[in-house]
Image (cartoon, rainbow, N blue to C red; front, side):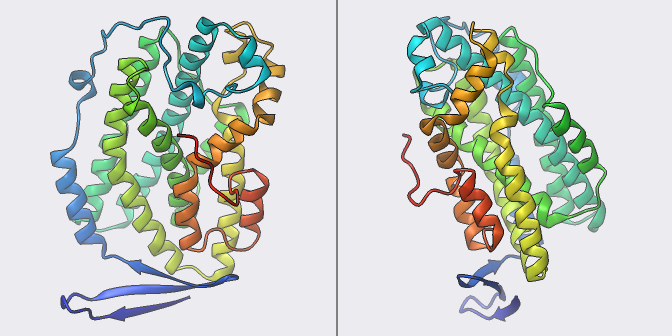
Amino acid sequence: MSVQTAAPETGRARRTAVIRCRDGDHTIALTEREPVAERLIAISRKRSFDPNVDVDWDAPQDPDVFYMPPQLVSLYETPLWDRMTHRQRVELSKREVAEIASFGIWAELLLMNILLKTAYRFRYDSQHTAYALTEVADECRHSMMFGRMVRAFGLRTRRPIPIAYHLGKIAAGAPYLPLQMFAGTLVVEEFTDSLQRVSMADEEIQPLVRQVSRIHVIEEARHIKYAREELKRAVAASSTARRRFAAMGVARFTSWIPRLVIHPSAYAAVGLDPKEAQRVAAASPHRRAVWAWSMRRCTRFFDEVGLLDGPARRIWRRAGLLPDEPPQIF
């Protein structure tokens, strides 16, 4: 890897990094932290929401209206789905939204830990630290918003499976590793953003879910920008060996996510055998296509910055998250 500085016509210095990958050199543009943070803070002032005020928590929930587009439900286009009644399908969509929200809260708690570690390491009066703390405030609101949405469904949030929960505790106390941390952050942010962009635009699903999705999508856009710029800087500062090692770890974490998101009790609650439903969902070509589709922007960006280099690419491909042609779900 090499870092170069150019002086474009605007007179402002522009830095680029050349990443040596097995498929050739990748050149990435590096931004300066303070100007980026300043812009993101300005956007935050204009485009932030208070879910207690900006969501109609008393909106009626029609028992015949889906909570997410049916194409995103894990059993869609499977024999089990064909045997389910409409009400069962709607109820499963509600429970899967609740499971994704619970996973989102868990992930955002870990992200807040990363942001606080970031703020701790930079000058406390810098814009970079100020934005990290601004994003912590955003994530606090998001986590409370997701929890309140699940309660509005008449359900309860759930911790991830024990191994993920305990690994999360270990990760929270781990050393500051920006390469792994911001890459993992992007994985979660990009896939939830993909699902919610579809949900907020679909007038056929519950209004409450649309409102929550809209707020999260708008505010998450700046979070994704921040994580991408930090990840590019971390890649530029890493050796090839360290980058490939981190990429393998992130690829393995990503390959586990489909098994972490939906708890088998969601299937039992609608009268299905949970083990059979898990097997059917895992084997569903449509479900695998949905996951690949939801990761499409993340994999494109990871490819640009060299995080699909070496063995990591094989892990993503084996998990079905890196098809030769990105599927068109919508």
